[in-house]
Length: 256
Image 1 (cartoon, rainbow, N blue to C red):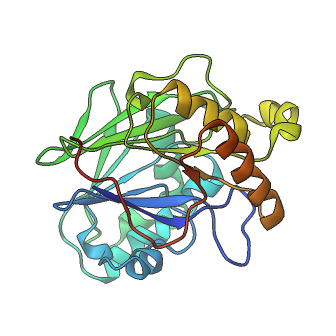
Image 2: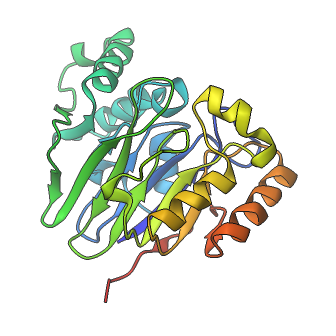
């Protein structure tokens, strides 16, 4: 499995990156996690054809994670996609997504792409073959789901937007790659807590508790100097930490 970041910023975009979204590719199928920026363009920049997208997973109903879903669906319609697109998320996230699409009357268009709205019900969702998604609750300001993906061997976990968790979700344990949000340094923790986010130090502590093999920070503030401080802070706790490089495939590899 490999993971590719299409954006790495928090709610405030920078000149070099849009809001956080990523692709996960099992080799037989690929999914898009959250929809920001210009998804069809970003998918192409990552080396994929958006018409082949197997599923979208929405972590929660905040604007920076969902606003571009209508654009993605509209692009797939123009491309004459006939294969159904599965969109996975909590009931609350999917209701918001439907309402957003209805603003543009997308589903009134002739030959619109069939959408399979898949409400997460506590059971893993099969994407293709052994490629499965499992969602888990995290602690944000609204109901939010973290994501676990596996292709039957590699294990990938994404925290989504969350405060530091008192208990590490089972799905994060022993992750080959943990992607965790981080909105600042230890000096920002009080403000981050109120806003439903974590610091780089707290993300690294979660990686240690989860026995993760690698940590990548995302949902970053725009200031590059702050990002450097965050990376150093996290590495002091969990050395195998880095910041994401957009459109670079992170090969999770095969577990031994």
